[in-house]
Amino acid sequence: MELSPAALERIQRFATEPEAAPGSTTDWATPLVLGLMAATTPAATEHPVELLDRIVARRLRSRVVPETIDPTADPITAPGSFAYPAHLLLTLGIRAMIEASDRSDETFLVARDDRHEYPWTHRALAHHVAASLTRPATCTSGDSIDPLALAAAGLGLLLHDRRFDTALYGAALDAWWPIARDHIVMQAAMDGSGIEAALTSLLLTPQASGTAHSEIADCPSLDVLASTDAAELEAMLTMPAAEAAERLTDFAVAPLERCPQIVDIDHHKLAVTRAEWIAGALFVKVVVFEEDPTATTTYRIIGAEPRLWYLTGIDGAWMDVTSSAVIMRQPLVSGILEFTPGSY
Image (cartoon, rainbow, N blue to C red; front, top):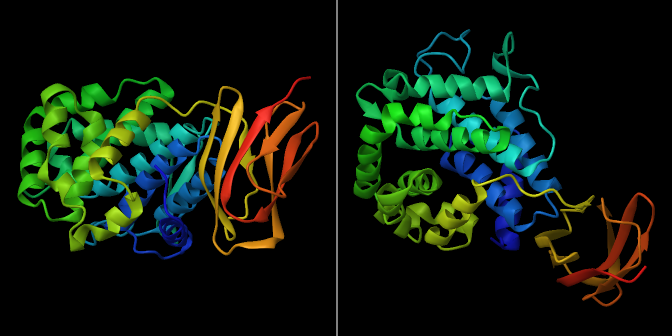
């Protein structure tokens, strides 16, 4: 998935704004897009992880819980706040699939207000959401099912299982999937013009199998992303919805393979829309926001073997190989760089 510079700028602006529409569809969709972006740039995941961390930090401070609950209650366990932990779990799951370090037992604080904070971990949150799914009453509002929250909860559990080798997803879904699947697919089909219906179907696709996968992947809501009210999601995906669903399914299979990383990119000047190692060579596509061949920018490759490397693709680009990193410098022009190993 290659994002346009405009989409990248939009996502970065939304992720870095301190009070950016918590609970909005864009808030729920942005982590998903960042995960798909990282899957296309597995050799440059520093920026998606940084943006996901900012989104998580903002959510931990937000008040995206029903106003009717006790103002001092834990937003994770409070009755009627299932959507909040579900989407938080999904965001943490996407981050865990991208980043190498294991933070499943690292404590974070969920703030209800300035005086009430509650300690949680990714692992504890996953177990809580899994337990909630076995009690259908905790996942509904009155008699209605929140399809977007259920889809996020399921995918969040699936990613947790794939990243940390747990078995929460299957047991949790056995309780509600047979009944809720038809309801969710029907609701998404009936409300096919809505961006939330499209996003719900998108999130459900990696979770389904067999007939259910076909039903969800073919759901009309995935075909309406060109409509006016779904233009925001379409602009972020910058790809056909069916392709995005398949990319998301691939992303949910296993964590990204660990590889040498490009770091210290100046994201105000350029965007990396492709970064991957193929047969020992690194291919990087750089999009510069304002080209200036007389100016340069510098970044590093860490984890690459300190040996002879060849750099081609952009005139004037050069590198300096050190024992700790490869220092790259290039003119502020767009292009594709190929970083290939030479003989010893």
